Length: 92
Image 1 (cartoon, rainbow, N blue to C red):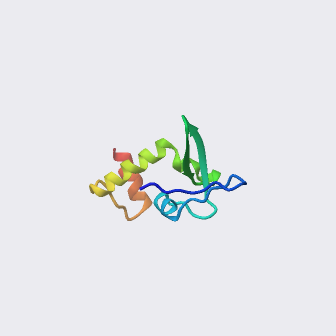
Image 2: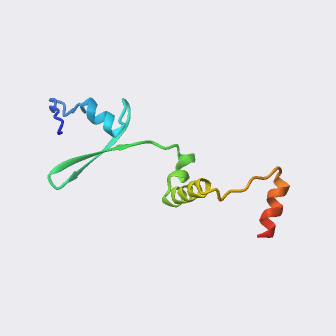
Image 3: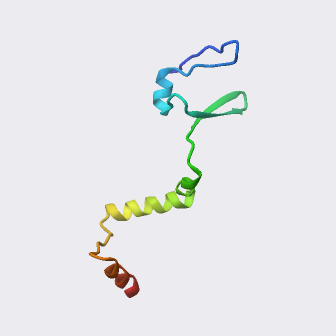
């Protein structure tokens, strides 16, 4: 069901609560607005601390998904010490 909002004289638009909830947009969040053909497309954006940006790269996220799949499938080992871990790695 479409939601409607009126543009104020200052060009402001209030996003209806239902839209904010569905998109997970909260007060103070950033949104990107892009004109595509004859439409304004609004996309929520989250700021990421520069020191954490690597985590959101495509490669890192792919590796995270693979690791989660391994964990779910039981393809993990546990070690009582770092020395045991190193010995296991050296055997491979």
